[in-house]
Length: 284
Image 1 (cartoon, one colour):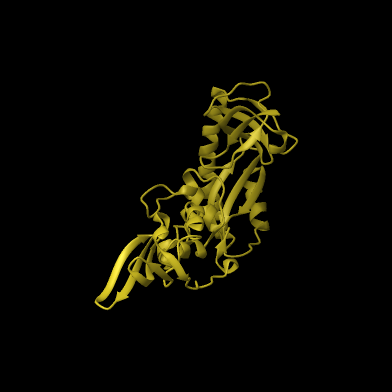
Image 2 (cartoon, helix red, strand yellow):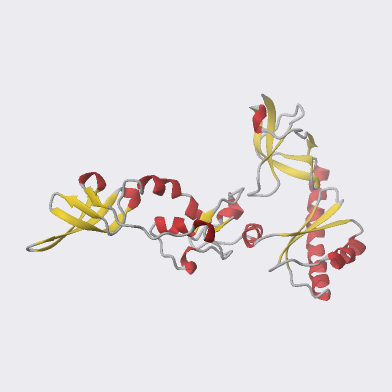
């Protein structure tokens, strides 16, 4: 077992383990650490905790210290410098006539590096731009191309549910989402209704998928032939999570339509479902 603390470097960022180096920290505390990007400030999201050695990636880096008032002042100054760097970079991108959209600019805490995050339709040759920016800022420059989902996470917005985007509020990692999930959940396959502001399938399709997969094992699909107490009929609608189906039974006196629990019916012939190629409809 080894003692760790968990740090985030953005509101909905991934949690990284560090050694507390004997320090006792509380949730929300800020500490200075060295990362692969340089010296940064991290916020404690997991307080001192013992975990199994198999849960960490060795070697485990140690925190340098808790932040001081001077550190917070430096961090605020960095935020102001980032705003200025963003304006300058946008101008230089325009001057170099590059087909790229600048999303965000980040200084490392010690200002040893500036990271510029951008989106583009394809590969971009930004070598001349890097030289120009390095000449202006007199420090190391790194440009990183990100995807549309990362752009939405970085920029933030409000989803069709009226709430702040999941990716920018609590999702620390993107999970695979597919059109097959929307179909199994009985949603409209209209892209405008199942896509988020990033233009990709909504991340929330993944939240209830496990429950749907379990229920779909016992709930017959629409069109299935089933036996009920009123006779043989066909499934015209499914209420998957509730474990209910709407069944239409034709009789001499007309048709009977009832909503029944799956335990009260017997499946005679299960309808074939339309196949959707998972590989063609999945995004990461």
